[in-house]
Image (tube, rainbow, N blue to C red):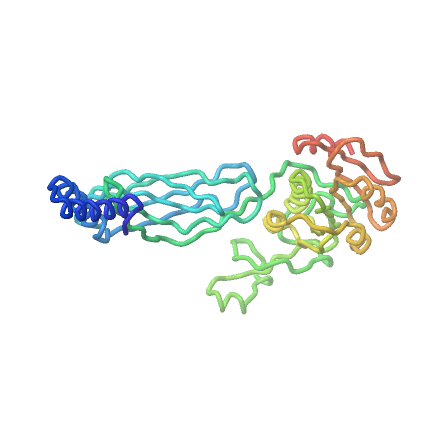
Length: 359
């Protein structure tokens, strides 16, 4: 296809031909002929369909906000001739990235990497990937789509925290193996068999269906639940990061986690930190406060409210008796304490471990 410069060259050549013939001057005709020959050469340059194998991989597919993620582009020339003038155009959400590819001799593989934006939490669609081949004069270009679209998931940032004690003496260190104490076990998930597993836990139907020996993984149902309530009104990223840090700390220690917002339940899992991060990666600002979510939350274990609203923090005293421990992570300064509520005010994520440990 012709570029704007190519269309301009074509129009100018036709105009020069008309002027030359009308006025009887050979010079405009010569210039017009040169322009048309340049267009013909440009079309011959870009017309053949190159035999290319193109792969684009995004690594990693899930990344904390602000960390590095790259796209790795691999282009192999299976044609008979060397290729030059190739340019890759990749789209990241609403932005577009263009990179010039090096000359591709016959039968060679070239790799190019370029960074992906990770400043904004959420799902970022990557693609489609377009390869553009243009002639040296920029008169024509051919655009072809290669590969498949991908999705980059930008998760909240987290910091390491100890698990909040529930105030009760049941397995505060979390489970140390897949086998829970007798009489308190509940089914968690299926996983592949490893040497040493109890054959009584083999799930034969799933094993027959998948062709792989699968066993039931059990956890201790008596472990206290950590309920994390995130206030999503005027949602600051610091609040999401703090909620993720608290929930991930409990999940990675093997505790059940319940994650709520004013808009409704967000996640409920037993020791699955990845699920917590995936759900919080997609959370958006809402209009509802968390008063109703706190009131309807199941009691027991620890309740952690993450909010920037002093009024919401003050209402926690009303539910103090339903939970073993109530903590408010307040995003801001100057928050007064509430009876029976442990306050952890923060202004940066790096301040959370200190505020959390001194509660």
